Image (cartoon, rainbow, N blue to C red):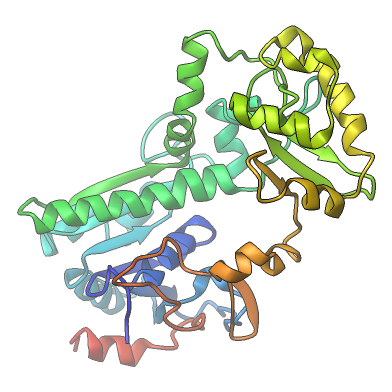
Length: 365
């Protein structure tokens, strides 16, 4: 039985990788009935519980080069509220499933298109990955240590933050608009657009003259001695974010930082010298010892945990931030709702596992 605020919402997801499946997972976790169209006859691998991004959906296998199967896809889409596709521009049109055809069959549909570069522009047809998209927006160039190469920040900013989350947001906005009397429409989600949007505050700070393009020279990029990670005596790391004056004062107290120069918190000329001093201080105790001193206080402190450690932290355990589902430890559905909580609806589906079931449930002959 579905559970969540999106119960009753139907989404058709075309098979893809990375951010497309992640968007489908998010919507499914919140109760939407997400049906994934997999490619028939392509030797798709059987799903395992470890395919976390594929959780919660049913799969129907279709050969989209077969006119009959294209018609089946169109019949599914006719009964859907939203559609997810992540092909290069023009692919859906060549399959006979482009927006003009689809919106003529379902005028209320939220047609979600997600690519790295967007549906138009000089790079629209070029291949790319998260790292390329965030490089083009200035986000990657702002991250990393001074005089070192920018480092890949996993694929959280382009694929998932700038892509999947903006697609989910756009789909739900379009669905609300259609249910309120509006018409269906195309949502063009470019990961470059999303990554740029995520950087809004930093572009604003740059315009105000309080952010510059030199890495490790700004408030939030590791330039400040009170906002960075530090190695501990045992080779672990802790994260400090003592920005506000009262939190900074507590940091000085808890760390025993009595040097008068530390009183000049916002004097950027002193940051490198103070960084060197605080590096030495954090190496005097183990990570656990610093946790005993600072964790749970207003220092704005946290240990830097591995993915193996994170699910075992008391805070994450009490909130059940991670769950064990089908033997696999994975993040729980988020965010949380007081009246209509989301849940993992089902384990990952192998391609075509629910073809007959979906066609029956959606009343498609």
